[in-house]
Image: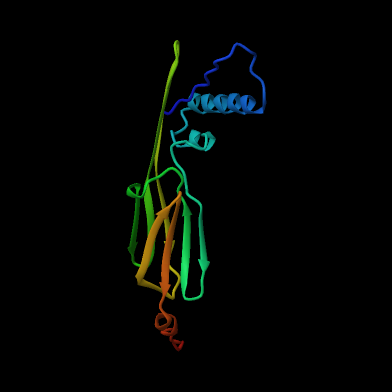
Length: 160
């Protein structure tokens, strides 16, 4: 189980809203541990750099194409996979973060990692052969071309 500890480097008494919420989160995590709740449950109380994350996405209709933007801060393009199967666009990858601080009497080393995955059904007029992905400055932009013939290929079926 992923345990988190609060480390205070000052001798001043703890105060502030962040400390109150950190104590509450730790107490809730301990309560869940005491009742043998599955490991997945405490994650709902984790910090933003926790184990799992779901990237934000925005899909815009640009007339002749769609533009999908997904926020993936802190990643490199080699950490991201974009796949298409059966009109389902799957974007997945892994986020890893490692920090280490050293001082005369203290060593702090923190690691966090997690996989993410987003699946989206393509619009009915999307052209699966005209999809491109580019990653810059923490944002993945996927351009999805439109196929006008595909949209017009709708036919009515008689009910009898």
